[in-house]
Structures are given as C-alpha cells and as structure tokens.
Image (tube, rainbow, N blue to C red; front, side, top):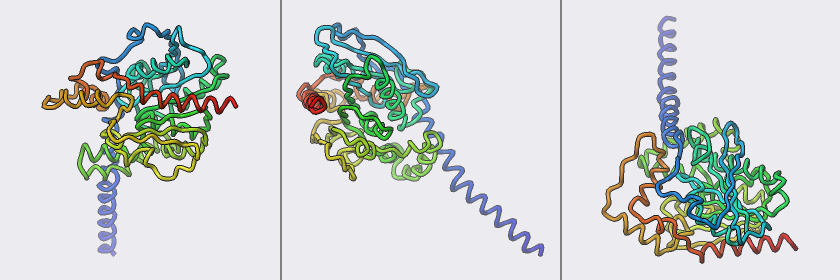
Length: 352
C-alpha cells in the first residue's frame, strides 16, 4: 500500500512538473514577449509630419472613447477645395501615428473630402500605456466608425475608409462589427494577426519562435475575447460592399503570403485587387523614392533601440533614419489616383 501511495505521489509530481514546463513556463515567457512588443507606447516618429507642413489645411481636434482610453482624432479640410460631400477616414500603420499619413490626408483633402485621422490606443496623442495588441486596430477603428456614423456633422455623409498595414488589416476586420461605409481600401494589410505574428516571431527568434504561437492566441483571447479571432476576410465578406485590396509582392513588412490580397475565402463579389511587384510596403511612395531609401541605408549602422522605445516605432525610425524627409514622405499620385478613382466610383454607385 505504501509502495502504491509513493508511486502515485511521484506520478502526480511528474505530471505537475510536465504541466509547469509545457504550459506555465511557455505561457509566462510568451506573456513577457507580448508585453515587450505591445506593452509600450508608440510615440511620434522622427521627422513626423504636422499640420504646419500643409498651410492649405484647416485642422480641428476631438476625442473618441475606446474603453478607458481617449483616441486623439483630427479633422482636415482644404480651405479652398473642400466640397463636404463625403468623409474619408485614414487609419495608420503600426509604429506610427496619423502624422505619418498627413501626405495622404492632404491628397484626399485636395480632392474635396473631409478627411479624418486618428491615433490608435498608445500611439501619438492618444492615451494608453501601450498599444496592447494587433486586434487593437479594429477595436479602435470600430469606435471611430461608430462615432462618425452617429455624428450630427458626419453621419449624413457618405463614408470612405482607407487603412494601411496594421490598419489595412484593421479597416477590413472592423467590418465584422456591422459597419457599412460607402467603400473601403485595405493597403498592405494582413489577413490574420496570427500569421504576421508568426512571421515576426520567426524573424526575431528563428524557427523556435513558432512554439510561442498557441500562447499568443491564448493571451489575445484573454485580452480581446471573441474579437481576437476577427480576420480581414471575414469582415470583407460580412460587409459585401466595394473593397479595394492593394499589395506589393516584394513587401518586406507584410509578406504577400500573409496579405489580404493572397488570402483564400473571399466571397464578396465587389472586391477589387491592385497587385504590384516592386512597390514595397508603403505603396503610396514612388518606386524612385523607395530605391533612394534602400540606397541611403546601405552600409550604415542601425541605431540601437532606446530605453522604453516601442519595438515597432524603432523599426519605422531606423528604416528611414538616413533619408531626407521629402523622400520618406514622397507621395506617388499615380497610385493615390487609382485609390481615389475607386472611391469616387463607389460614391457614384451609391448615388444612383
């Protein structure tokens, strides 16, 4: 009997040790990695654009609540060209704030739109001790879309939505909440946050990084509940309206295999794709400017990550550290014209 009791005790100890090393330790390790990536603020990047760079724009600020945080939102109008016939919401990528997109905001404002930009939780002028996680993009975009739809000033106007990278995913995934804008543009977006996390994990830690994937899923489920599972494709299909998906096959940040453009399962018949071979990640920057940036960093040392600096902000800053501001924020109007033509066509269809 004593022998059996000792055997059972030993078995229980072994089971607990296995549980600790196969579940508890990996979960704790992944939690700290998650905190490293998403637990810090993403303050404004080097050389970020401001309203002062565009004297033709009138700018006003307001806030929208997202949980406990205040999202810093901004309205831009070209004082000579604004027709006030439609609203364009421009949503930024990770490592940035809306200021990094003021060149695109200015482009849309010159086309007559009322243009709204905002900073996602933990970014730019918005509150938050960190950016929390990748699903935060569609969580915050949902709050801003809801505000616009219920606003006395904007609610009666057709709404267009443009999102890039993190928000290329975010604007599409936010359609899972039931929004019905006039048109949506997803540029350089990924379909599932877990696919891009897997890419980054392997990039940072090698193939062993794949082992963290189940624990990332557990942590995101704990933070975001069922919305952690929202994908760009499920949102696009639920929406059913016009969506332009743009991506370049040489994108080094969101690989084409992870993209909305390459994702399977799109059943929305109103999706159009704009696929390039050599435009990198930004898309709205000319190929010439992209090539200049690549040349500028050849042989140059990468600066170190500063204390308390968000990893994603570092990746944005260090990439453009040696390039002139006008090159970094170069705007390729040929690409932007295609985006605007798609939006304009959607608006005409809505007026029929």
